[in-house]
Image (cartoon, rainbow, N blue to C red; front, side, top):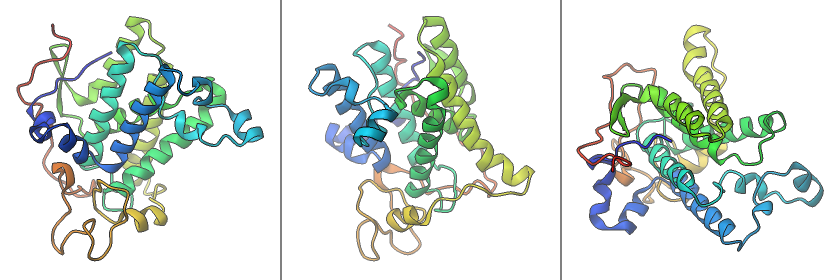
Length: 281
């Protein structure tokens, strides 16, 4: 499993302590990270039976255990090295995507668009579950986000076990490492496939075919606002802290204003700084 280099850019928020770092994480990523950590710990310590966390359509249909739709996206598996690495990848790349200018599908590239992107990925997981025999969606969604982030930031430099490469290659390195180490590569491959489907519909179809099929639902826009990155679940109000002053952006977690992919601009890259490469020792 590839581990990206963590430099100063990824550690700046630790200056004020772990609480400040946690509070700076955008809302969708914070919910996912917290839920994944809690579900994985509780399942491994058998506080909650893992059998009640995984996807089971019959249990949802016959016993109305609808929480499985969410818990299957949170539980990461038994305590082992790859579980820890995928938890790290979840918070690292989800945060990079959510706070670094995601695709604008109607909400200005803010939290509402990211929430819709995650819903789209979940729907893909649910539709493919009977074909793939999937009962956990957490790993698929991690690589779904990673792939889309890599398409949005293809030239961003990353460092895998001391080997520098561009972000566009990262999902395929992850796939190769899963095959090489004997891990189940199906979640990686399907996550990449789902991510490419989203990327194709959002970034390719409107340009090549002149069609625009992907739109963030209005209820998400009404709740999260337009062009804003939220660090809480509270909807923005005209005078509340979630609404930026006119002519400015709310800026939780040191994020940047969203970018409109239709507007040409300079190529972006992520500065990983001079930190040490994880796994190099």
